[in-house]
Length: 159
Image (cartoon, rainbow, N blue to C red):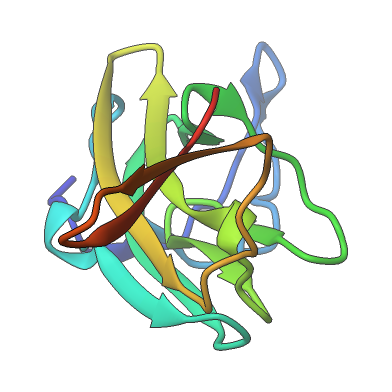
């Protein structure tokens, strides 16, 4: 068989009584290699900077034979689909990570891993979410410098 070509099959039993009638033709099948290591198109996984409230979407082509297992993670913690972060995977086609409305807490390193019995590949991208600064958190340490010539105030946040 030639890889990439379509074939149909018919089965016919043969025994001591002779050959039987052939079956109906099968649905068309495409000849493909038995094993292909898992792969992902790294060019599709780029670091992004978005404003808070904007949507984030990574749509990554993947493949392999057998079809790879797909794992998305953020800062080394495995992600699952929620209302605020959706993951959709179509076997041997693509996987999509979608954040409808980015928040500051979505910032981090996102990693995609595809793995099957013959190999694995990993890619990563950074997500930066721009937002208004949050109010300072205390306690605030204030230092006053007063002389007859000038006055200065210094402060810093204690951690």
